[in-house]
Length: 315
Ligand code: MN
Image 1 (spheres, rainbow, N blue to C red):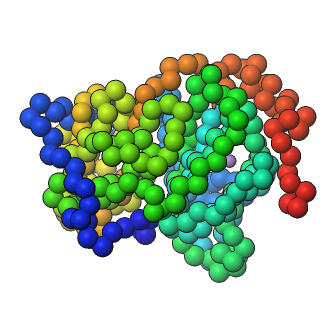
Image 2 (cartoon, rainbow, N blue to C red):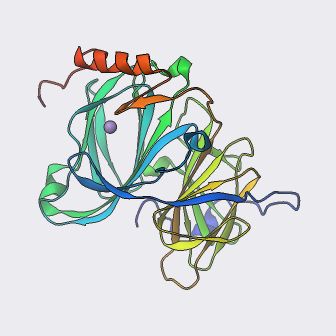
């Protein structure tokens, strides 16, 4: 799992050991993500399936894309489709994803890069592996997360942040057994590059086999841990978790993570949390609004071409 790695983890800033008064967040629930297919048929795990949206707020949807080893000709993406009212965050671990949008934006992300797209008032986009990867096949692995926008920003001007892996803030656990990549928000005073509308924090953390980490986490944020790969435990109660499981944590100051020592592969987790927006959510298909009539309006605006149109060179 390439993402971003380092030669000498001990050269990185180290997370402090939690002080004696720190409360380790208890585990509220562990769920297993069902497998499904997205876009033109690429395999995903639906990380948030079956979890109460109020516990996930401000996040609304998350897919682990792959991990899949494609044969030549097999890689698939999405067709052109619209979004309104939220942000799509795509983090690539292995493989390459190309994206293009109706506003003329676009780019290529791979190995630890993140594409942060604020759909806001509305945009059309396409997400697909590049042609050379379709021909060669290969490994494909990433995450797509949907971040909600508060009512006042739902119709914000669409925006792109191309966050290359090199910009991600890298931290080491106190003993060097875990690598924390801060993609957005702040973890233990270290700021990740992604700019967000509401306060959130997003991290991809790798815990070496047999190692443990007490990750400081903003007490006013909720906390969700998704296991991308490997196995281990979460929480002070050491609940066993494995690849494809989502853990919702309760209140506290730190997130306790430990990688199984019986395996040779590390525990790879996506850790996310934020300040809940606490507004009504009305969502249908690619639109996430506050009311049903706003969703109907989004469909109407899309049909009328008001969310943009496919650029002529791709039509
Ligand atoms: Mn999309």
